[in-house]
Image 1 (cartoon, rainbow, N blue to C red):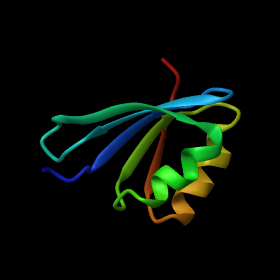
Image 2 (cartoon, rainbow, N blue to C red; image 1 turned 45 degrees about the horizontal axis):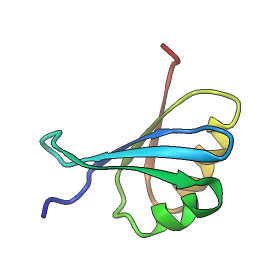
Image 3 (cartoon, helix red, strand yellow; image 1 turned 60 degrees about the vertical axis):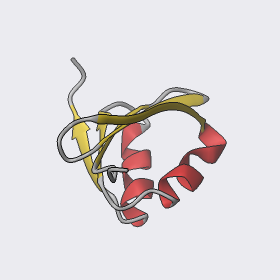
Image 4 (cartoon, helix red, strand yellow; image 1 turned 180 degrees about the vertical axis):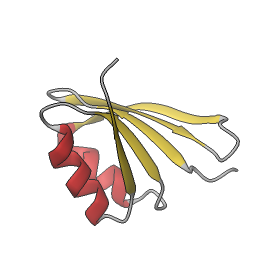
Length: 78
């Protein structure tokens, strides 16, 4: 099984959505994660690039994910 290299994270109030892809861009997973389980989920993932839309809570989550060893990229809302 391929290793996840990129995770796109859609943050919301209570339930977040994570999409994982390997180095070739092939989707590996798409799952809903509760706010309380988010850091637990990312602690189990290999260090990778995490992209999330820049918004009010994005900077908080970016700092938390960076502490877990992930590279975080905030992207402008489109």
